[in-house]
Length: 296
Image 1: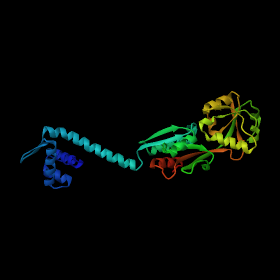
Image 2: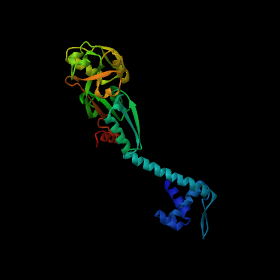
Image 3: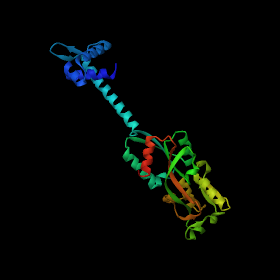
Image 4: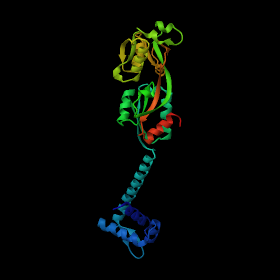
């Protein structure tokens, strides 16, 4: 039995007149009668009582009418869902984000704009560092990601990325630290020999490699004495005076004790936030997120 049979039956059940039902369907009366008879034969029960004066539903016909209407409604819904999904209006968007991304106004604006534009799309937000996100994008386990790195050259060629904004790297320290007494930006060589608190390599943040490269260019290796996994832990330990930390400026929105900061004065002492997608395989939903992120 095909959907057209359900439409024929519902039209006749509502009109209870073959001529009017056929006109409503845009067909002639004989094909309608034939299709109804075929349905009744297939169901092995009459759906209508017919006489020269009237057409009426049988008990089976009355019960079948409710199911036929539900079937047509579900079919219409399935068609609508497919069309909206094809236009990128519904579905699921899997988005990666690094741990401090929610602290960024640009991230909040992007997500809010996307929710307003496509309220029926389910956003599945998955926290993870940049290296994990890149791997997930390559495996198509993420559709888009908010990444932190210094430049797009740090990303594989099969990942496309658009820079949202760039921010300076800051030196965070206890207010009683000797470096806190200096005014203005701190030259990077002043960090040589200082006890530093930084993210563990196992976390997979791009900041680890960037700091090491900055220090190498100035002739020393960072003296990392404490490694952590969480942003709040890092700043909390800085507040105890155990060491200093080099962090993106936005991370200092996490308030921790007597922590003060100074800008790091060094070439390339900046970090950027990008929205990344698999190159040449962006979904419509990922393109919509990107448009929201860049204000399009």
